[in-house]
Image (cartoon, rainbow, N blue to C red; front, side, top):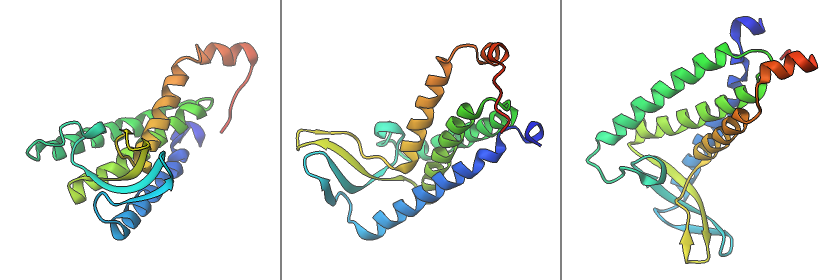
Length: 173
């Protein structure tokens, strides 16, 4: 069964990311005014409500609206590629599967916002006192970032097929 479906069984993690992302976004939209801050750790971390009509770091946010559909098409295409890639993974590629489903869950979470709301809801604000602010982000962004870091680390793991053959190690999940 594993060979037929590849690592598609890991899609539950994407569903978990999407659910956590959407539940938290709905809570912040219902309970905070735009840019209102709830300080969690003084001078370092706050909850806030912000909308992003662009991509990462508000890239193209001030355009006329075409970027909404442009980024939606990209997110849909990337999601389709990730599912196909996930299906083609081998039994010993669990790390890669987890990385892909994290990116997929985050992409779909933000895709939903973009298509349904016309903007992505952000609510996590990391800052240093009042001097430096990192752009607000959300659970989906965090999952995408974690998945991307895992993908990058996977590239540095060397030739995994040779390692498996030499050590005889095999992951049969």
